[in-house]
Structures are given as structure tokens and as C-alpha cells.
Length: 249
Image 1 (cartoon, rainbow, N blue to C red):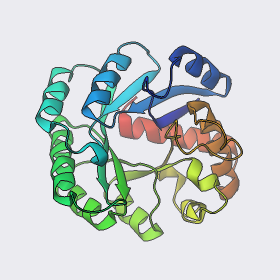
Image 2: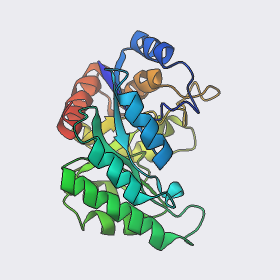
Image 3: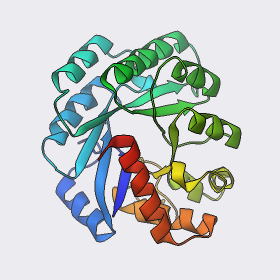
Image 4: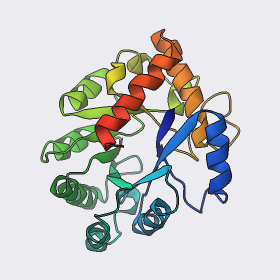
């Protein structure tokens, strides 16, 4: 059994969730963690979490949506704390790719959500782009663990995150021809890696012309096995154990 630990199963991207689940099962993928990225998608993920046993959700506000109402988000989290399919706070973090004009607001929203994760003892799913130092600084303020989603940093950064109790999320990017992240990933212990698609984005080779789907986790698992020179069954077993350790599912 394989788990897609990070996808975005919103109506904006996927019209037929039942078919998506059926297709993924044919590829050996049986479990999904769908991440919110805004207040609106948080509400959608809460509804989704009550419809499918196979779908777990992370709720949170992405840095691109940092103008969303964080107090309303807190009320949603508080009101649904008994929902066992809400298993993490995410996708949250910092993103300076397009500039740092709202840097302080991003940090405020990120740290507010980290404080909620600490309060409710929930893992976090972290997005960090062009913001490594600030991301690490914020994370160190709180007693939280989780996944560094779509990791693209250095081996030194990965090691620091692992020391802090984080796991490294790897996906389709490592299959891209011009990506060198596979050179980093091969030196990270399998015991600290989880697999993710980030569907509908970042479709792995050789399917890049298609929209990404959770079924392609199988391709990512096979690619990871290849660069580590191990059997894919070992990748499946170890990464599934990691999912249980992080998300308690």
C-alpha cells in the first residue's frame, strides 16, 4: 500500500474524486492526505474529510493567501478538533519567490499556525521557497514536527530539519531532467522520507504532459528506489512506516 502524503483534491482541480480514487488503487495507492492552502479550501477539506474513508486532510493557510482571516481559521480548527480525519496543519510556510513585500505578514500567519499546531499537538506540513533561514527560525520557536513539503534545499538544511524531528517530502520534481534534487535525496535516509505528488502540480516524468494525480506516487516510489539502488518494496514499507509515525494513521 502507498500513501500520497500531499495532494490538493479540491473541486477547482478534480471533478470526479471517486474515479481518481479508483484509478489510484489500480496503481497501488490506497490513501491520500489532501492539503488546504486557504481559508476557503480549508472549509472544503473539512467537508471532504467526512465523505471518504481513504482521504485524510491537512488544513491551513498558504503564504500566498496570508491575507486570509487567521482567527476564523482558528475557529474552524477548534470546531472540528474531534474530526479524526483532520490530521495536520498545512500547507503553511513562507514563500519569497515573488518578493518579500509582505514578509512580516507571512511570518505572522506562519507562526500563528505553528502555535496552533503546538497547542493541539498536530504535525505541520511546511512550504518553504526562497525562505530557508526565516522558515527554520520560525520552526525553532515551537515544539512542532511534520513534513517539509516538496523539499528543494541543501543536504545541510535537510539534516538540520531531520534533527528538529521533520521528515522530507519528495515528489515528481526529482524526476525532472534539469533537477538536481535527486542528488540530495539519495543521501537522505529512507527512514526520514515520505512520498507526495502535490497533485495536480509537478507531474513526474514520463507523464509531465498530464495533470498530476495521486496514482503517480507509484512512479515516484520506483524512481526513489532506483536512485537508492534498493527494491521498491523496501521504499513502500519504509515510507508507509514514516507516514504512521508522523500522522498516526
